[in-house]
Length: 561
Image 1 (cartoon, rainbow, N blue to C red):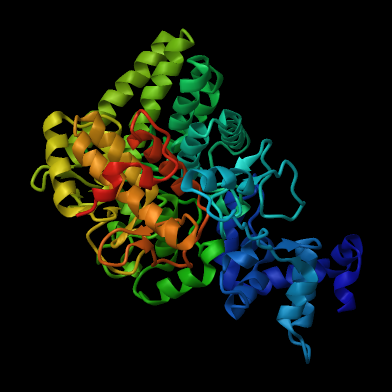
Image 2: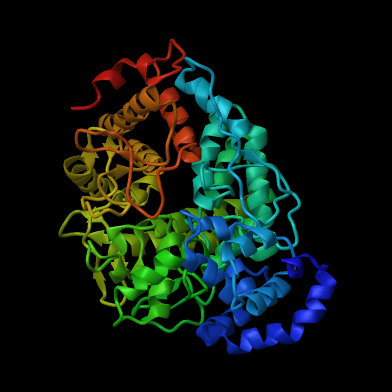
């Protein structure tokens, strides 16, 4: 393997002609390369672009149980020369691809396993995890897929070694509850930095996440920080709030009625809504073979279209759910980009309201009024197009068929969370949620059990919090408490058995506890579960005591039917 040990300069000079031949001959990547050259020239390139057919070969070899492993590997040398080396050596007798990878890449390593003190209660366990889940990467290697962030940040845990956009809001709720306002400030500053550098907050701080975002919670993060520091926070982050809005609304002025562009949908009457979108239409870097396998199951579909819809599904945070499928049991029928989602548009309403507040505080009254008007129009659009009057709940709107997607999901509570619904709409939605989604272990994500992780029987911490807050906004504290305490009890019982908090939970049936389904094993840690658990512990704790576990809350012991 001496060829792999020469200096980067010599390797680059020696293999430049070979590399050119590689790129010209790799026809399977030609259309992807053309697309990437347009999209990625102004930002760091992801590993599948840097390594081209070598990346594909390693993922196809399935050396690692998790495809994210090689996506997170750091090249030891210039990727272009490593690619050229591979092209020269791959057909030689005795060539070993796994040895080649070991010689040319540093694979990610798991952090030391955290062993909590014996007998630790739930609150102390969560508080002990904050430093364990905190990372600092103000500088990263030249070829690393990890994007640097100026301040320390908290990761979810497990395979998720980087910060994630929408996860972080619920993690920050817990940090605030623990009194770690310095960490909340750091997280807001990190996301502001990403907005300044890239014009949006990517899915996570990896090069391969730059082509998409996630549910836009930045305005809620600013809200959270303002509860501690005051209204000056809105003015301080006004430039970044505006950049967030500009990203999500790009092309809104130019797209024709009845069409969509990027993250914007313009209906026939000129109403503007938003959708999830990814700028690339190739397999996801971190789930490469999964996406190829999914596309192969539907040979009649355009592969680029399917890859875009899979990526948009990842941008939604609900990757994956029957919510996005035309056939609830078939992932290859995913049509994420065809839907204007109720949660996304509710969050955009909040962003518009927050911008109105920020401009008013900055004494820019014309802009403040303009964003107040936009929020009012958004509210009207949600209540017209995303309200299913026949079923009596909020759902996603299919802008191509011009019909509401009638499925009930936990996202139906976002208009209550953002106080968009009328009292009558809230009553009807709450009734449907209580009858169909409330389960012994909390709120189930959908009523469909199909093996996808954002479907039954799973419940997720952020959706429990959205439900609790949304129901309380409309004076439904009893139903809110049922959701919150049932989930809290589920978390506690799982902790009592396994001494960990996990990414998702089974909330229905006889085997509550850690959830399943999806593309990877259950992950523990876990940022957003920790945050929501602390909020629920303090919310339902009797006022005259401190609750270190759900066992200290009498109502939690009898919350499940």
